[in-house]
Length: 307
Image (cartoon, rainbow, N blue to C red; front, side, top):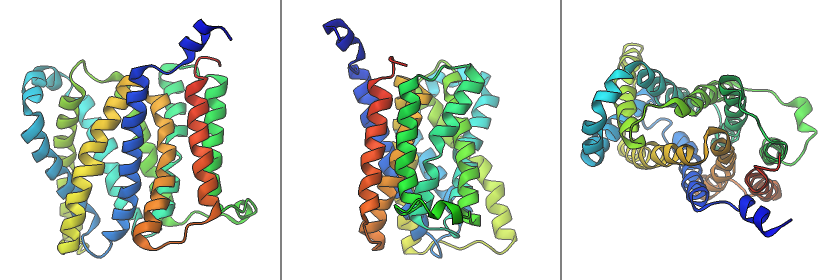
């Protein structure tokens, strides 16, 4: 390979910035899986969803209001897009996520989130007729091998007996909604990503209100305990505010298909944080999964032009 070819294949500074943004996003989302389990019995799902997006809205008004005011005329013209994106990527995804946490484990939540890159790539191909390179596809397969290592606990024979419980099914549905959101970001209005995020956060809070009302009316509401309030603060600042901004910026830099593969880091981070904070044992297959996921991301990025 010539020097020029090597330079072409070498990731740009913008790509490296995207890698850091998306890795941090995955870490926050892995932590969200653990926080979702901690929230059980401490705050009800829709109370948590409404509280987190209210918190994000307040942070957006505090730190991002100048851009929001500047871009408001454009955002207003694209109100339907913003409503659909805020509903699917924020409110519905989070609602299903926290309900699922009542029926499955933190590690399973993280594992199922590993399916998002597949849905994102399929959605990108269907919506935009995007071409996926050969080595990029191999990278996806390798990262899925890491996810598979976790879901089977390193024993592939378990696939024969694998069954999906209610919580895992809800997580899978929630991932489809988030994948639609990720694919839709490519068609975002010509405004600052942070302004768009602020508008979608406002929509997410408003849409959460009727769901919260149903939760209260059906007697499922659980007022937050001190631990519940701590969970609200943590999910507001990290997976809701910082991670969502990082994800939007990452997608903006390298596109939804390439950004989506970093979601495969979520099950690895979720497993590690579950070990650290929930006392679950770290197994050899977790290490295997970590290696496969990182190698898959490397393949997908390093040879993105070779396919």
